[in-house]
Length: 139
Ligand code: 523
Image (cartoon, rainbow, N blue to C red; front, side, top):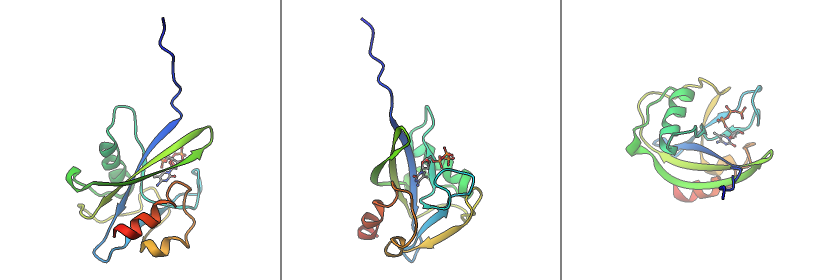
């Protein structure tokens, strides 16, 4: 008997809500040449094969923002999902209040610190949007 191959339709993506001393959260604007161009997202990206979600997030934050986030500073906070082409994006959001370095837009068009209550007015990816209310309640 052979094992059935179950196609993995879930695309695991990790993201961070970096929170500053005033309770604002860092969003980045997706570049024009990428999918979901121009939308404001929580920084992060795909979990690569062999990575834990936390390792993936630490790598992405280093690549995208040039900051180092210690493992112990990443608190799992929430998840949301959204259809993405023929797959389904599973977005895992972590909260971090401490990191080393000053975030810079190394891959995004621009960065912006935003209060959760003000995020409703911004165009955000479908998986990020449901997380706003939760962040508002948590922060
Ligand atoms: N999202 C998303 N929200 C969010 C992130 C970090 C990513 O909806 N906070 C989506 C955007 C992409 C997919 O997750 O569809 C993978 O993100 P990323 O940034 O790793 O992928 P890209 O932009 O480098 O690659 P493509 O989207 O495949 O061009």
